[in-house]
Amino acid sequence: MVKLLVRDRETIQEAVRRFRKLVERSGIKKEMRRREFYEKPSETNRRARLRAERRNKRTRMLSR
Image (cartoon, rainbow, N blue to C red; front, side, top):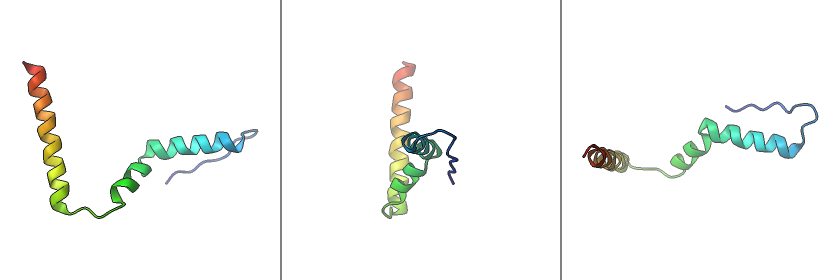
């Protein structure tokens, strides 16, 4: 959970900007996007497999 204390002499715009950065860094936005729609376990596994294949392909290309 992200908590933000508004500092003395801090404008609302500055506080909102700091809040957005805190939310971004904590990964809440990413988590919300990921959970927005249900994803079948097979799709999750497929995505992980494809990510691993791409990673392996890159490492093979770099090691040549």
